[in-house]
Structure formats: C-alpha cells, structure tokens
Amino acid sequence: MVHTMTLAADNDVARQGFVVEDVTTGVHASGFGQLGDGRSFSFYVERQSLVVEVYRPRLRGPVPQAEDIVATASRKLTDIDMTDERSVIAAVRDTVADAQPVTRSVR
Image 1 (cartoon, rainbow, N blue to C red):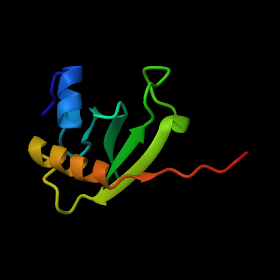
Image 2 (cartoon, rainbow, N blue to C red):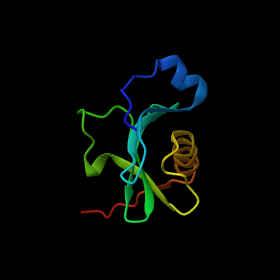
Image 3 (cartoon, rainbow, N blue to C red):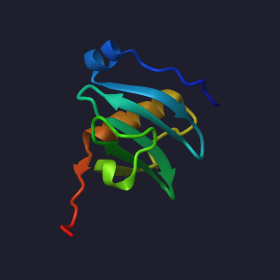
Image 4 (cartoon, rainbow, N blue to C red):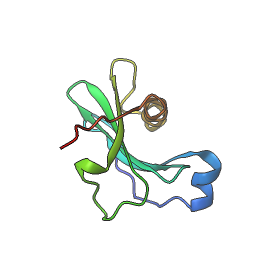
C-alpha cells in the first residue's frame, strides 16, 4: 500500500507531539514525520529492524545530512505487523520515544 503525502498542519504537530506525514508499509516500510518540539524524523527497515533517525530542528535543506541526526533508535520487526499502517505508526512512535542522542567525536 502506498499513500499520497499530506503535510500536517503546524497546530496538529504541536497538539499531538508526534505526526507521521508519510508512511509506506510492507517489507520496505519507510516514512517521515514531525515531533512537537520542531524536530523531524524518518524511519525505514534495515535488515530485520525498524530504524528511526531524529533530526535537529530547522534543517538547512530538504534532505537531512548525517550531521543533522541528533538521535537514533531501532527495534526488531518480530512483533510488528509491517503490512498494517497503524501497527507501523505505533511502532515508530514507541521507537522515537526510545531514541538516544547520537555521540559525535570531536575532530
């Protein structure tokens, strides 16, 4: 199942604190959304895990770069129905809540 992208209204994001703007279900599930604090996130399946990347607020361009990632989390796919949009969104919401800050080495 593929969905047409619709942008969430700013007040929806602020009120809910978590909005998925686009989701694709299935073996190659992926999507993106926004958090109430101004950060955005994306998710995708890699190997047998759901991976979430949280980006810093106010990105400079339309495509986040590696240095824009401020937190990450992953979870196994074993308890997620990847064909059900609601299950995927719930898993993403829980995974975003578990995201840990990315540590960067000083150059």
